[in-house]
Amino acid sequence: MLDAETQRLLHDLRNPLNSISINAELGKLTLERTGDIQRAIHIFDIILNECRNCSNKLNDIKNTPRKFGEEGVG
Amino acid sequence: MADVLLVDDDRNFLNATAELLGLLGHSVKAVDSVADARELIGKHQFTHMILDLILPDGSGLHLLEALPAKSDTKITLITGHPSVKSIVKNLYGSNVSYLIKPIDLSQLQSLFVEHQPVAGVNHSTIPLHFNFLVGESEPMQHLYEMIERVSLTRANVLLLGESGVGKEMVAAAIHYASKVDGEFVATNCGAFSRELINSELFGHEKGAFTGASHRKIGVFEQANKGTLFLDEITEMPLDLQPNLLRVLETKKVTRLGGVTPIDVEGRVVSATNRTELEIAEQHRLREDLYFRLAVFPIHIPPLRSRRSDIPLLVQYFLSVFNQQYDSNISISEESLQKLMEYDWPGNVRELRHAVHRAFIMADPQKKLIVLPNDLTSPFSKISQQHAAGISVGKTVEEVERELIEITLQHFDGDKKQTADMLGISLKTLYNRLNSYADA
Image (cartoon, rainbow over all chains, first blue to last red):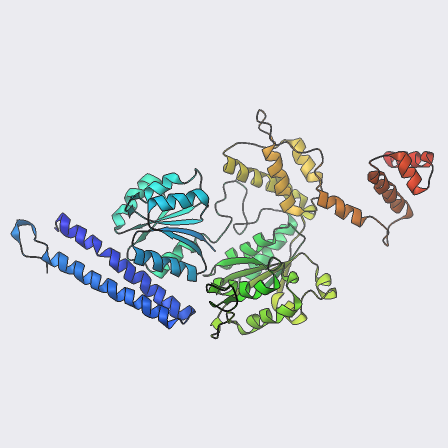
């Protein structure tokens, strides 16, 4: 079983994932419907930034001390 | 097109979702707090609200309490965990839907597909045909058969009928029966200036003309894979019709100021209250456009030719108003008889307004609607006067009687002035009027 803090950190991962998902959909639709390359590049930058955000959050989970003094997850 | 309020404190998600919904043709207001959302709810009625469950200054659920009772706004909660779904469902019932993070386009689109049938929930016991139409008379059975047949094809439809017969309802019924993926989008070709018609139909790019500060998606794109309803098609200027014809022929649309043609498919249902003869005689539509639009013409019957549907329509409208005003008003046999005897030149629209007015005037003790003494509208009086006069097929007696009645009406019943104007003696006028009373 995961402890409450790890569960919270895992739950927090959904926010950047959510932003990645919706921005990827926006990028697709922007290119399909408007062909606006500059706008698409800006959207991909947001996605890359959110990927870094995800990576940081995963590191947080890895470095969270587990109950009973266990090593971090992973 | 839906009118959406989006509330989420994640700016990247909020901005992207607002832009995405805008590209899909919806109107969106996006805010990041309960307080801002509450302010907007007070000013405007949204068709949809998409709410984050946890916001910095409270919960999205607080906003549900801010909505007026019996609000038609469709609520969607964004949640990170499916388990929240069952908890909230117990609290707020099944009227609330959910999006589980991470959200994708198909999840978002599913929120609006369900909303397309504009008529929505049928609160009455009166059966709705194709979710929109009321009536069991023979002319309506014929109409249902036409809708059934055309729904199996992709043919464009031209709806013909008098003002107020329910052309948009029939268009929505065709969309409903066709079970297509895209949306039902309605626009009125008579409501736009010459300059704006092309932008409304085909959209424009940012900077395409002075004042084009944003890109606009036209109705053809909005209705892609769905149904586009073009009301008052015969009011579209003749010289602009070739643009419409081109889109119908090529199934491609290019936004004003744009260069890339965009594929569009779907059905065009157009409508007019002019007759086919008038369209041709007065050159209201180019012939080539007429044949593109009227692959399948459907005539919608006037209400006077289906009087047996009046009780059903009245019951349906009463159930809608009772639901809306949370009351229990009905109609007496006598009032219903009066409604059945009237000609309804303004058709179902006029009937609905008459029932609404009578509902507002209802006797609170008897819980019955109260009709005015005279049902006729000023518009129907004008048309009656226009109908009067000499035409082939009328007898001399009929024309004489019309002339006497109109003149009498003109002088507010003053028989002396009427007789003077008509150049007959007062005695002759009385004799005539007595003979009409005996007839």
